[in-house]
Length: 408
Image (cartoon, rainbow, N blue to C red; front, side):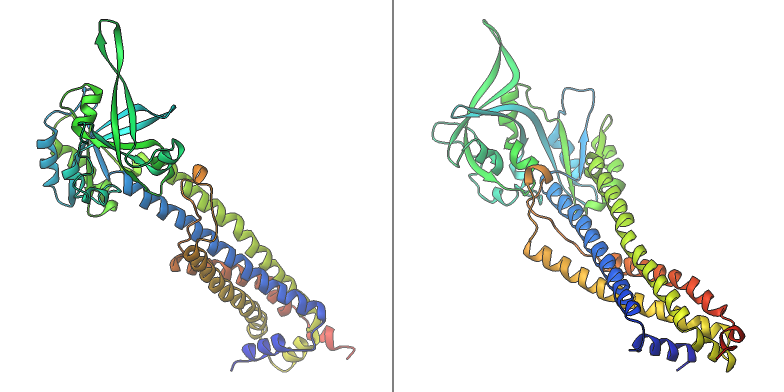
């Protein structure tokens, strides 16, 4: 064992240190551990939010949207969807028609987005409707010939709608009558209620067949978007242009990340700001280590003078205090990293932190601890602790044995 390591461990284990030094030493270790644990949990929460939002978004929205701006709609959408479906990595291309309508039931009404879909094509995707579409009668007409509609769970709860109830849907696209332009209204049977886990969709969306929504809108055999689902959502940005080209001239593409760019930008900024501010805890703990080592240098000045007089070199003296700081920082870093990682796993598994879904879109705080994030946090904490040892180590090197031992 080297001299620096031997003396550093003896100083750390010494029971003859002043009580104030022992207290500050433990506080500095606890401070490093608290800073690391807090930052690991905060980053896990940010990653969990991002992952949960991505999962919920991809359950209700396509990876790539193909539209034709400047036209009333997309004609021959079946042929276009077949052509796009044949492209590499495309699981399904589904024509759809979006219509903003007024849904009313029992004297209560709300504006919603009604989406017209092709059930046969939608069944091939991994969307939130795919499991419901296993029912062959999901969009079947009832005995009176009324079409079916599927509504979000929050919407159904707010309007007190149950499966099997009848609702009235009114389209703003009117029809010309002898009495002027009148809105189109039709009665629908609620065949099912879906729960995507994403508040905005569960509270404001409904689904019906594409011909049904076309008839309600009075626009003929048109769609306004071709929605593409890929075998890997991360390929959306690289494949978007080629899919638009395969669809034909005049088509533009938008990916799911572009549709939600503001949301993910906010998450990235929040992660950066969180990391900066919580890192201040570790920085303050590093200052405590600096204070402890500086006080130790003054307390052990005679020991240092004796070591120098006996032939100890300056790098060995410097190494004693650098090792002390590194060991204290390592204790705090390792314990804090493990504590933060385990706590994040527990909080995520048991969903212990609840949220208001109307504000945060999901009902609980998800945690997704990352081993890479934990290692990066630990590395930064160790660097801060090492930097905190430089000044006390230089103080120890400057101790003059002749001045200290003159009157001994």
